[in-house]
Length: 176
Ligand SMILES: [Mg+2]
Figure 1 (cartoon, rainbow, N blue to C red):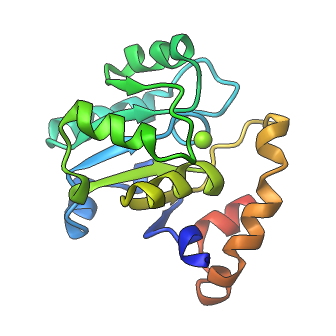
Figure 2: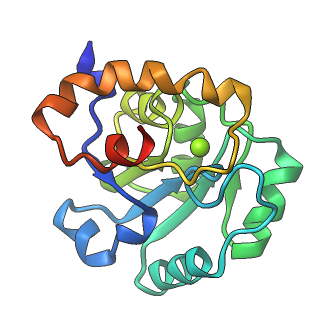
């Protein structure tokens, strides 16, 4: 069961993902979660640092698509800020949003990773869709919404076996 909660890769931030690093895993495209992955939940903007990273990845030929459970209008604003295509109301952890994004973007499933901060949304959706999964330490606002907050202790529980093997796991180190 725990293989469903075992990401292929942990990173502190999307900024740690470089074209060279993706190449090591034969990845050519990324489905990017928005809230707490590219911006903190309450922020209305994506930071300049993250915007520059997106530009750099695009310039290097990495395919990018936003994939969020957020509402269409809200996610469209962020997509316009960074000029990326998007799939909203993705219903993660169900895998359908991943499949829609991959088909729409004409990505190759074998070389596509999902990148997100939530075990029970991004990671599980990616696993169910058969994608490479990258878990990032969440960009936390002062206070996360209650529906995310209640999931964090459960995330710690399912990640705990991994924690024993990987004490330097950035996700665990930074979140708890
Ligand atoms: Mg998120």
